Length: 360
Image 1 (cartoon, one colour):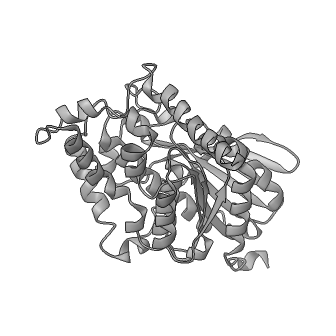
Image 2: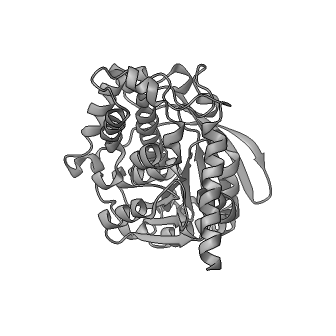
């Protein structure tokens, strides 16, 4: 009985937090600028190309050459920040806001350990995560396990946020798909850089909430086996914006006015479901090593229902779901230890790359 009451408290906390953040007039709602017009059509067509065959899994990541500067270093570790031009093709770059064309990344790594004896995990941003700090705090304690952390600043976030955008509230639905597609391209290129240029022995990708959806997509589409960690993540953005707390933070009236064929709220929400079905992880190819996929979900998540998490596990046989006690907000704060444990366990399920001849 006590456990049920505590679980309900976590669930209520998510809704109270969501009401404060999204139902007050402190900031505009998501998608106040409508659907995005021709940009939405472009994104729909580009994403649909991923689904029909597993060939998308073998499309090679584009090569990037980040420019690095050292932020600080100690006796045992070094933090660098890097810049690189987003590797998206020109059509996608033209659709992105100019502020998002240059990607920023933080790279925290142990010193004096050969790269082929280290692992590195790329951490992707959740909704509202505009800085490197929280993800660096998550990855920092893993240095002693010889696991480096690479943190990507998302398009539309932080220094890449468009001038007219308020906080995390994307102006158009097309921006959500643009953010996701560009994040996938950039993360795959960073993983390729870690593999071919830096020579890391194992790699992974993780993210919380929205970042976990993107991490799952990257893990699905990367051409070599990597560990994949969706934390507190749904199987699709449909869950977040049509079922969870964020449905109260969406500009449904603006979307209705921008959709000439729809006259009722139900019709607008059904169109949103159709568009966001493009983000359904279960439609993506099974990762090369599904045994190295570990999802961590919360028992009383007001944003992400349990059935959504289990849909990913069903679609990717061999993947594992771990449950932590709490809600979406409380688990962000209280369960970093469980997230780190999942990262270590998933990386342990990968084979080490062979050491380069020069290091033998």
